[in-house]
Image (cartoon, rainbow, N blue to C red; front, side):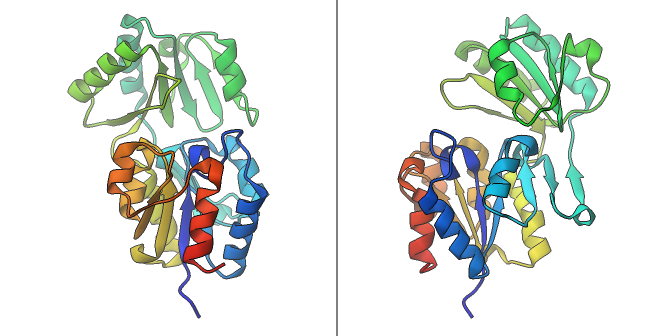
Length: 269
């Protein structure tokens, strides 16, 4: 029998087309891969509540990596384990203090399915209400009373640079941060040392799959560690340059079924 692979898929800009759907062709190829014994998992920066529909659509029965590795669990098997790595609330409040000095548009803290907004913002409320989280709006320094899964700061480009510089100077030991792609100037902050590769490693160990049999697909800077960790790291054609530079292979874009066409050829599906 052919070797079975663990296939890790980022969602936005990778598995999903720009309209946030999975193409019928891609779904079909992934279905075939599963029938042939390959293991497919999702590894995303999104919370579980806004990736659950894709998990169900692909009929997956595997653990999932959410919040870029800060939360890893198995939706269908509670006994698998519940890996939730958080940011210390006191550090979060210090960061809020600094962010306020930079006239940021908004600051948001997530604790799994609980979302805290520093300021009211309709557009953000729309985006973050997918999956029906519990939402609270109010000064984070007052309302937050527990450690958080992840934190987002929305600002203009110049302030994003300044705040990231501050995070590197003051909190490098405790937090890791990324910036989102255009058009949003957003800094995403999670606990230091946490990334998608850490989550993927837990899943690989569970299925007893060696690194060389892991294939990972991604397009953004939150995919760097995962693409490097996988035996075969594949960057999307629409991916950022630094990712393409470290990837083993580059496939077509997310609009051109890059994931499916690559797997179909590689695994002879």
